[in-house]
Image 1 (cartoon, helix red, strand yellow):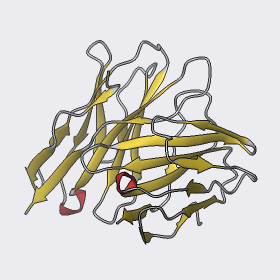
Image 2 (cartoon, helix red, strand yellow):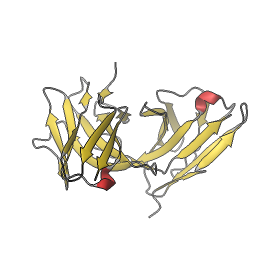
Image 3 (cartoon, each protein chain N blue to C red):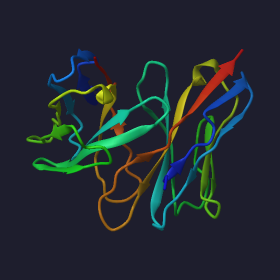
Image 4 (cartoon, rainbow over the protein chains, first blue to last red):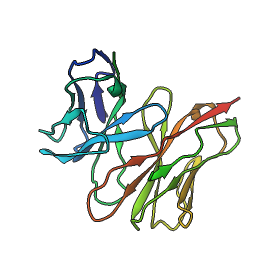
Length: 115
Length: 116
């Protein structure tokens, strides 16, 4: 049971570099999310997707881009890495987003450091 | 305004004792759900317990229970008989039902340390 898989687990980027955080889920969930976790700040939503081809901004989308070409995959792109993007990134998915009882399943997280 | 407030940055408890982690929320939506997640030092997010706004009884899952006080807009997590493995960060989160789609909003978390 793979669930939600994120790669890489760790990455160090130089300022101005680009990278893509990969996320895939095998639960046939229609909803997927990207959160970032900063120390003492909880999790903040970057982007989410309600299905293939549909994405929307969350609370902190600046500096990031996403795409959702398939149900399974939801990559997060950082175009010009900045130190402020040093964080732990979580991908999550849920089966159905209508109604309040939908539990989200999380990946293991990606720890990103921008130097 | 914050939708989820966790006022305890850190809590200490001795093994086998009970502990309550506080969570208050803010919403005008009559339909919402409250979640608690555990994040151990390894970093993964583990779902613990869920309470719906229309649920008549407080949710329980093994040693975890939720003290839901709707009028006070609080959803405190109670861990009974604490174990060393309960040492972790705990997050309260809310999803509003509403008429459209919604996402999970998290509090800042409470670090729980269980001592022998």
